[in-house]
Image (cartoon, rainbow, N blue to C red):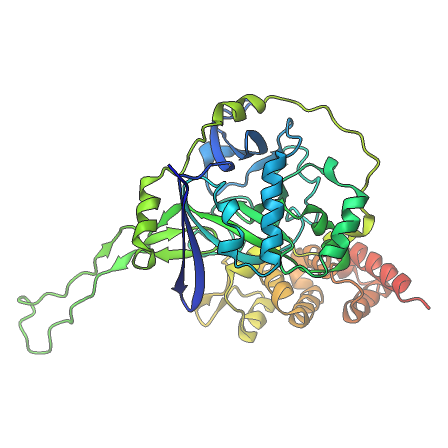
Length: 462
C-alpha cells in the first residue's frame, strides 16, 4: 500500500488553516508510549518517547499516570547520537524547497511521508530558541528535569484556549555543533524565510528537526527564528451546549399549562484540536475526520522494539572544544520565558480601569474578577502580559507597584522582570533612585536595581 497524502485549507474564523492527512505513512518521526517509568522510582509515571527512525531522541516522564496538567520530566535519550543520514537529507532538501518558494504543503511532502498516520496542521510561527527558562535550547536537556510549560493542559492558559508553541527541544546532540557549520549558517539565515522545521512535542515545546546552527546565529544576531511547524491533531474537545429556553407564559396565561422550562446542558464531541487550533466537526473534511476516528492516537511504529531496546543504551560522551559563543547565551536570558508566554495567551486584554484596580490591591473590577482571586497571581500575570504586549505600560505599571509599600510581597519578582529590559533609560532612572535611596521599602529590589544600574552605566560610558 502506498502513502496517501491529502492537504486542504479550511477557513477558521477568517484564518486559513492547512490540514494534512497521512495514510500509510512510514512512522519515521513521532511519539509513542513506552509504559510506566520505573527507573526514577516513580511507578505512577508514564513514559513517552519522541523518536526519529529507530532512535529514541527525547524521553518524557509524565507523572501522576500521565496527568495532562502536569509538566513533563524531560531529557535527550542517553544513547542518541544523531538521526540517520537519509532522514537528515530529506529535512535539508525540504527546508531548501520552502525557502525557494514552494508552499508548505508541497515543499514538506517528503517529511509528511515520514509521519505516522493521522491528521496534522502545518503552519509557520516564530520560536524563541530557548527551553522556556531563558537557557539556549541546544544542550539544555542533557539531564532529566521538569521543564516548565510542557503540560498538555497549561494551568495558566487553561484547558479550553488554543495557543502557539514557541520553545524548542533539540533534535540533534550538541556534539554536532561546529564553528564551520555555524559559519555556513551565518550566511544562509540572511536570505531564509524559514529558519527551521519543527515538530510539536508537548505543551509550549516543539522538537527542532532542522536548523540548529541557524538557531544559534539567529539568537546572537537578533534575527527572528521562524519555523515551519508540524502539529498533530490528536484530541477531541467538547463545548457544552445549552438548549434554547422557551419564553415564560405571558401575563394572564395559565402558568400550570406552560411551566417555565429548565435549560438543558448537553455534552458531546464538538470537534478535534491540537495546541494551536480547535476545529469544529462541521469544518473538518469528511475523509480527514474518518482518518482521525480510524487511527489510534498512541500508535506504536513497527520499529518500536528497537526503540525500546535502545532506551537503556548509554552513549560514550564525545569530547569537543567547540563551544557556543557567549553572546548566544546572553541574548537568550533576555528572551520571553514560559511565564510571559502563558500570561500572553491566558488574557485577552487589560483595560486601564483593571490595571488601576490591581494597583489599589483589588482583584475585581465592575463586579468581575480581573485575572484571579489571588492577588499575587493577578499581579504576576498582568506584568507578564504587559511585558509581552506593551513595554511602555509594563514599565509604568511595574514602577507603580514597586513604589507602593503595600504591594511589598510582589516587589522582588517584578524587579527581576523589569531588569530583563536591557539598556532602558526609564528603568535605569527608577533603579538609580532606588540605589540612591535609603528607604527600607526597597530592600527586596535593591540587588536587581544595583546590578541594572552598574550594567547600564558600563554600556553607556563614553
